[in-house]
Length: 355
Image 1: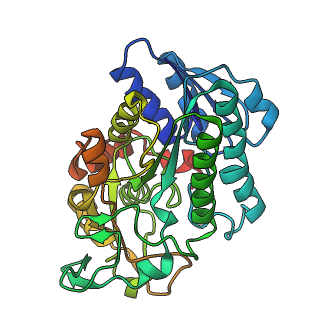
Image 2 (image 1 turned 90 degrees about the horizontal axis):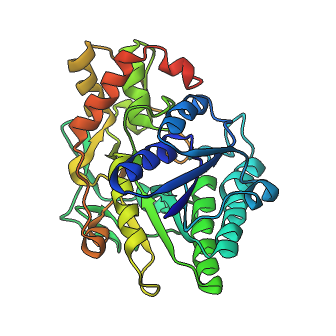
Image 3 (image 1 turned 135 degrees about the horizontal axis):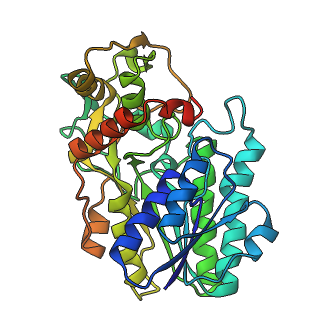
């Protein structure tokens, strides 16, 4: 089987390639990346050793995509991953559109031309910011927790958010592009008869993730804490109680490999995939873990709210578990241990990541 991965030199793309090659014999992987993200160049040699064919190109250019080798499946892992993309300095809203939506259209044309299945790595940030901001929360120790005694909106349970939670605008410019890409992918698959799966992923985390807050808060925090660089608890009274879940990309690769094997065309195509409540923690909890590992390092407190920030976001993967007999196997502690070991072995990783 031949697989094309866009964004192959990113953390998600390269990690998924590694995991798929370890799981499946006879698999051939090619990948395209424009190498514009600081640190991505470091993955070229690693991919070459794995036997991955690397193509230096940009999915925003239709001609670059047209020349890619044929594939049976496409995994679209190419995107600017920052929820602040398009509104912060250095990356315009037009660039966000070109990267996260127009580029997807070019890749869907590739799937149409080759009748290749298409898997879109979407995001937990497609959900309504207003709905997330109004969740019934209570404080337990140093983290927000869902108050399950209150009436909960559709798509929300103690296990987190599923695909039925509100996607009403605003969801951020980034989230809107991801949501539009989901609709576009489903329409292409229906119109041109190729299978489409959409995985709305929580935070991906693990060793080798580029250490910026926009590309992975868990990796960024552990690397920055070890390096004794300044850290801040931003918003929500500046206490670090905001909560996210974490999932290792190798676990996501298991879900993708299972989706390759499913032959049905009808039925549900969108699934939520994340670490869930067992792999969730607050920034304050993460900092306490780092204090135990590296010694005390206190973040500054900045209570001012920041655009698009939300207090609690955990993904409910039970639909994916029921449909694909899939579960997250990598516990949070192992993910943290892996990142911490990488931080010690690569003391200049923040510089490599452009921080």
